[in-house]
Length: 90
Image (cartoon, rainbow, N blue to C red; front, side):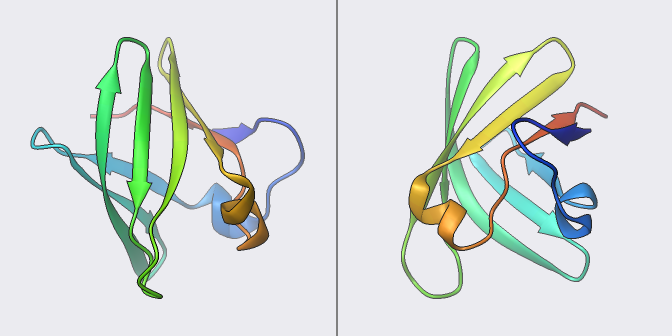
């Protein structure tokens, strides 16, 4: 849907989060994806990503109506992940 704090690049604008009922998700970009797990707690979602380099990292999502606002940890920012809002679709 758009940026949260600063402009995002094209690869973020074409990304999406796919959440499954079993607590697994995929952060998908054109041509590849990052798998992970998530835990929902009220209006917040904690995402644990498992990038290909073997480390795990996290992000916090906040539900705001039909938007999922995702904010990444500092180490994820250093790896070019960008905070952004994602619009819900079914």
